[in-house]
Image (spheres, rainbow, N blue to C red):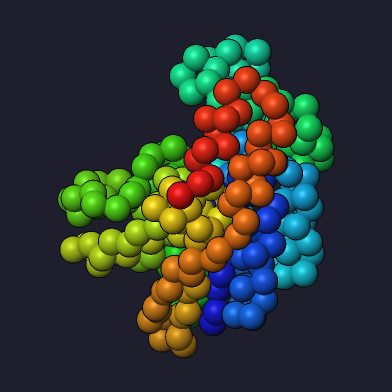
Length: 244
Ligand SMILES: [Fe+2]
């Protein structure tokens, strides 16, 4: 059973297109999407439309959960936008504009997604989460102590926990027997080279699995320019995040 796991697309059309080309070659049986479709890219409607197409094509073999920025956009209030501007100016001003440019049907879609989901494949129990099983915004990133990760997943009933959120791909094999894998980010990778990242997960008939993080190049310079064109306050701070 071949599964492509994508996360943190963040309205980045070019990165998603390049990743989908690679996914097509992999020819997966299922696709899992771990949230953060929108906020702070340059084409939220295109990215959501592509997700709708995947959902239509893969039907029951497509699983999706909500990310923290999906919730930020879907549940934004005047107060939450002002608070975001204070805490992280470029994200706050992007949020203010994203709410206006994202089609209402897509905002409604992400608003109603579940925060996590259990899936069982060949007797392997998998949990899909955005941050951690206990918190949609908790950070699982490289170089954490295994004991710390163990605490974060202690309430999960799954043997394999798939997460995103930090935009940093990593994996942990824990003493409890649980495996935790961060799929990385398609749309705003925080790796050194800033290339898009997604996960290929292969599960055999006994429930044993292997994984590979795929590193996919896209036109970061073009995306940098597209973010600048959005022309909201502090957009240059966001645009710089796409360059290595
Ligand atoms: Fe994200």
